[in-house]
Length: 141
Image 1: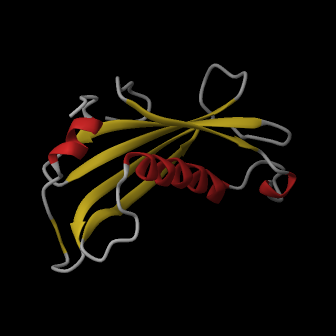
Image 2 (image 1 turned 90 degrees about the vertical axis):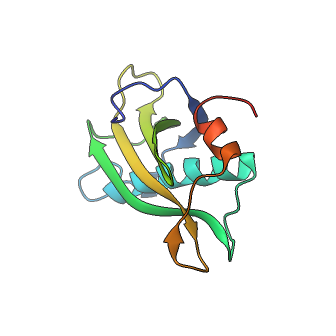
Image 3 (image 1 turned 180 degrees about the horizontal axis):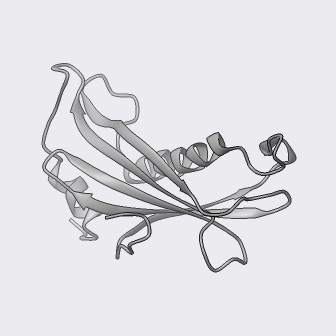
């Protein structure tokens, strides 16, 4: 599943103002900031549902992040980052992002983050907790 494909499970929605300093020499938002917007949406969602972010035992770890740039974002603007659940595996899940300039119909960028439920003590992936799986599937547990 890619960010272009729709998921029925919207996990979070965040809005960000574009700051003058976000632009680069090409007069559009620097490419690195898209990953920052997606990170902020992921971290905010994790905090909202009570996932441990600083855990010395078990928690999320980012395995892969990618961005597909559709069109440039420029100042002044506000953008909305939607975080959606993608494919769910035994010990990993995909989080999909769209970044849309407020007022635009189509996203300016899409993103995909492969996230692993990870045992930091034994340094290996472990099965997703049932409660997290339920949230990703849009079920209340």
